Length: 342
Image 1 (cartoon, rainbow, N blue to C red):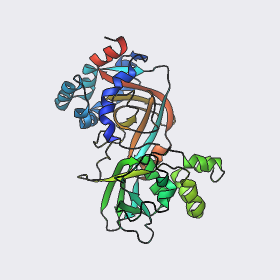
Image 2: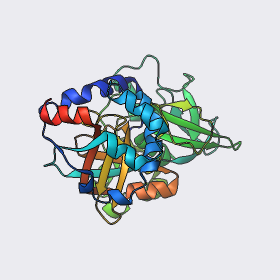
Image 3: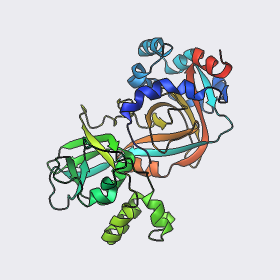
Image 4: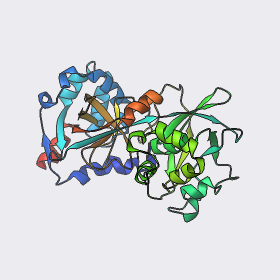
């Protein structure tokens, strides 16, 4: 499961990465050892890098951010001031995908709009037994003024929790964006996997569309199936200048389709450039920027690729589950200290 923004924890993420990597196997390689490096558009990666560069803590990063703002060539910039570092090179990478869904909603509970999207309660207690998904579905937060909007489909609302952000088109034509604000603290369990295990759906249709169709045909059983996942996500309304701007990631900056990834900040510096070599039917070789986090994104060779917004992006994200390699680009002094202890 990918949750879009752990904003309150960013300061910890930005300062703890090097310490977490101390003593772990890391290896410096050359740029000509990056598969496909010569064919990528590093200018696009540089533009994405600049969106969150100033949020990176550390004396080595500040001058690089100033240089990046005026540098005319992305490829030259990265090759001049960074070195590629493979963290835990003995580990195979795992790449998955996520997206920002588009949903239909209303500011009022009326007609088909029956499934609320809630703000985080001020008095929220971790793992409160009275605020499981089932309890909230059954009205535990009603009449508290926490509703941001009501969605027209329970499965779409459920997957909004998994993606962590979304755009909601209201009945008056306006579009609002919501982003991750917190969760109830209960352990995430995959409802889709449980439905497959119970024989309710097959592995072949364990997608948003397949589950949506099954729940529509079996509303009561579907409700209980989704409630197998006791984890529940709360949202906040996000104001953006245009609806085509990407959702906000863990650095509280807009992320970019096919240039932003979610990583494990214990191993990958938030805001750092990361070269990915994803295998599978649709291989991907490109420079990404670590601008997001996810509760299921754990380990040094783990990344979740942001595919963008809408159904097409969701289809691509849902098909992504591939191996490969991650290579972090680090400032030369940091890389030498990490690898050689200097």
